[in-house]
Length: 133
Image 1 (tube, rainbow, N blue to C red):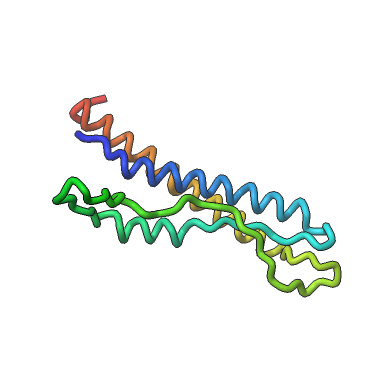
Image 2: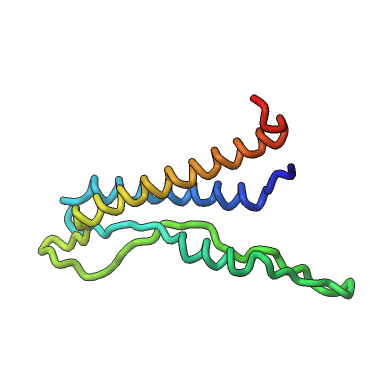
């Protein structure tokens, strides 16, 4: 059985993104009452989708002067600041309810990816041992 490094790399990036998102949510919750604080969020899913769409596209070099085209053009997750207008008088735009919901969704997504990685390695071990324990 061949180990799929692209799959593992994508799963690692997903775990990193969900970890970053957890830090951003924690920061938002810690600063819920800080005047003029602007909430942080992590952008990741749209780049993951784009990398899946482009993953199968590869450039062919038919001449030594051709440049190589990378297999994946997905970007790494990053933390951004939400500069939207606040409805609060103190200028803070953190919504406690939204952050708590995002925290639960993030936990579920992180757990799902961790389970996928665990199941992947279980199948690799099963392939190596022939299904024997």
